[in-house]
Length: 575
Image 1 (cartoon, one colour):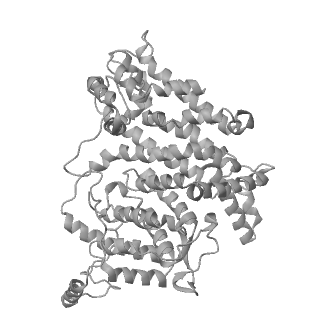
Image 2 (cartoon, helix red, strand yellow; image 1 turned 90 degrees about the vertical axis):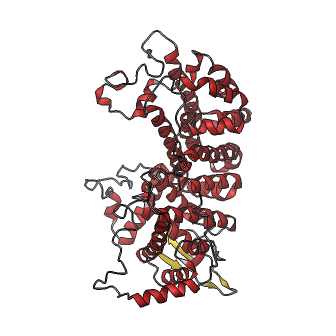
Image 3 (cartoon, helix red, strand yellow; image 1 turned 120 degrees about the horizontal axis):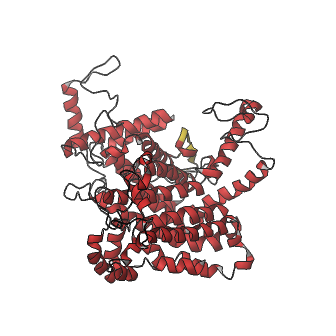
């Protein structure tokens, strides 16, 4: 298995691509299959699929498909099977815990040297790396015994997560750059016509090769033409980001089997609190069901006889996994957190929404740790604030998720308040430290992120500085925000206060920008975006509105003009 995987992955390294891409037949080893081309087009399979009307059979290798007596169109499918089978076997070894057996401890270093070989990781196409994460890394994370995290997870996760950061940055860079009106080109997959030029670039390798390689997702689409050439790149890029966020969610008990354990625990606590045991025998309220004779899980599936014992063991692994990948191993923690924070600005709502959930878990587990203060208080908070204030069209529908993340960061790092998991519920104010009036006492659940986590005892001004540097805000509005969020700590009141502050900044930035573009990065209209909905205008006096006169506006403007500029947004809106 190790040898087969090693040889299969070597074939994609640039020195081999430089040779094979020049050959008019052998270059099709790197091509996608007709089936992958069909899925990239997102066509309706009711018309007959790949071989039906409008199908993609014969488009990758012009005039030939896998039904014909020609090896070239079959190579892509064979290599996909070989590579995916190898990843699946690694996943099976992990899931069945064979990988952790003492009998193969002598082989484990050799296996690690292949599966995390830097040349192999860099040379994988996005579609290969996605399968690698799904079929091996995710299963490894969930199956590894707690006692072996340091010896069996660290050697694999450290190089893999470091590579993920680089791959995602290079993959999304052309898209983020296209938000600039002066650079509106979209990356396209390699076609047969460009093979000779790319082969020359592959021969030299280096940064230039990988920048181009990741921009197109590593894809070679052969003789394929039309919109599918660009659609294929978009598909693999989005799948890569979504797969990575899904793997992290599974590892942090935000989805999948481990999340069900937490949901069952919450269900039992609710039943005991209300004194209603019947809730343990009913499924979720989103299903049409009747009470069962046996106890049900939170998802409505029946519970096994030994479910409680199994869940107790899983809870130990859930807690330890959270501690390990976010605190114990600094290389893994920094790469993971950096990749998640960067993903907050990628124009894909699916990825962004799930990364906000991961950010909440990072806050619950690490807000108290000063090592995270810069990353959370500056980078994470800055990207979240920018996403709301710039109101890009792709953000429509997930603004409340982002505002909730902003709230979670602000109350934990600035105001000394804790929240329930996921940034939910009213904020709970921590008392001042008697020995240090500038600090707060730590929350009693600081070491228990699954039930709320802790706060930063010595508050930081980083989020305040970002807010104060937003257009039209300033220091005084930030002080008023602090007072409002300290006085009213319900989730609705705090989020409404944040929304109003961000709306003011968005209005000022909009006036400075002028006309919005029609691209996905263009500003959402008032009827689309959250900030523009149900807004009370100063010049319209409603039943409950305060009348604002012209003299009052002039006095306010004069006071703002005299206010010294203390903070700036640190280049938050620079391109």
